[in-house]
Image 1 (cartoon, rainbow, N blue to C red):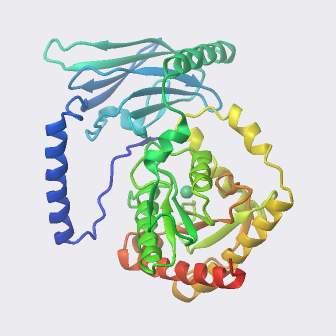
Image 2 (spheres, rainbow, N blue to C red):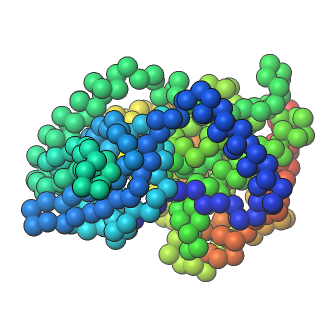
Length: 420
Ligand SMILES: [Zn+2]
């Protein structure tokens, strides 16, 4: 696994007027920030380095000021997670790109508002022998230094347990994850009316980039752009109230996404994604709904890939797995599944008129994000980022508008069919 930087890729098609407006907004926002002094302490990453020594691997982050940090270890796969307050990491990460020594991969990004996360993948069980912040000296800035040494699985598991205990003791005063996610979700449309609520879930985000296109585009940025376009299209009709599970580049747990929709009493849940596979010729969109058993091997593989978002962000799934598994497929859920299938089939019909679909679309797979027992849910893979045509189209606002209009027609039909 190589290095994956998570900085924003700018949408190339933003027109200059928009850019000017953005700049004006930025200035206004920055003024507000300076006036309040809220972001004055945001540390900036100046660079990162990797040092491989005979008995340890050293990872260094150069910073322009002091930061608070905390870390823990997770197994299966082995990972070292370092959390810091929100920092600004736009600097290139130097020689860490290729990985080296005990480190096989690096990811970083916003984990949740207020928390920036760095995830180091380690190819074999390795523990943190030292982690400390060096003050400036010898012409160098502040440095966060992490030394890793190899160990066995048992020692790793013990260190992981200890580190998790220390971590949760530290964050015990934090607000719950649901409260935090409320800051992230954004709804539009007038509240307090009887309009159906459509939850739109932009897949991935923050520390989890999702698939990465051949041209370097990130799935997380395309899903957000598509979610915003769809939200606008639905809101503009005046018939729907729209809820975005995220409206910025932030990580959300799969379960959080569902919780946000449930809290808002959403009538539909639509998760947007764009996959990537080895065969670069393969293209087309596909619509998925939940089933206990995947309809085919490919659908199962995709579900397991999408379900790994939490692993990528460094979350211990041992607690959550049992929770997810305990959701029984009862009668209520069967009804939900029928409704999901109705929406999915409408989407296939409508999208099929405007964009390229895969030959066998509307497939079933065990996506964790579709497991709300009471909200009809569909996962929409808008295309393949591994395919040049799909990747290019998905970066085009006109194409995303086409998609949004087709989905609107499918949703309109759905509500007509069921007369809610
Ligand atoms: Zn995805």
